[in-house]
Length: 145
Ligand code: CA2
Image (cartoon, rainbow, N blue to C red; front, side, top):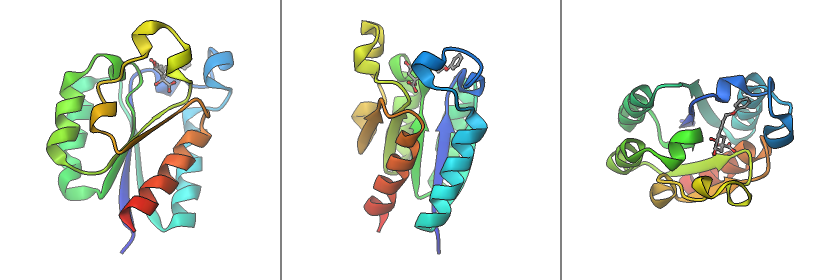
C-alpha cells in the first residue's frame, strides 16, 4: 500500500506567486501542489495537500494524521517561529515530520532563525524554493521504506 503523506502549508502561503518573488519565487501554491503530486506518483506516495491560515485548523489536521497518514511534510510559515501548539501536536502524533521553507530562514531577520517545529522534525530543508518540497518527499520516502 502507498505510504500516505500529509503536506501542510501555513499562513499566507496561499499568496505565493502574487508578491515577494525575490524571496519566495514566482511559483504559486498550485505549482507546489502539482510538484508534490508528481513527486508522490514517482515515489509511490499518496499525497494529501492542504493550506490553512488558522493555527487551530493546522493543529486539528496534525492530530487527525495519527490515523490517516504515515508522515507529515510541513511548511509552518510564520507559525514556525511562534507556535508551541503546532510543536506539541507534531510531538504528540509521533509521525516522522519533515520541515520545509522556501527561503533560507537563517539568512533573514533574526526572528526567523528559530523554529519551534525543528525540534520535532526528522529533518529540515530550507532555501531551495519549491524544490525543497520534492527533496523532503524523497527524504520521507527513504525514511519510510
Ligand atoms: O520560507 C518559507 O517558506 C517561510 O516559511 C515562508 C513564511 C515565512 O513567515 C517564514 O519565515 C519562512 C511566509 C509565507 C508567506 O508567503 C507569502 C508569499 C507571497 C506573498 C505574501 C506572503
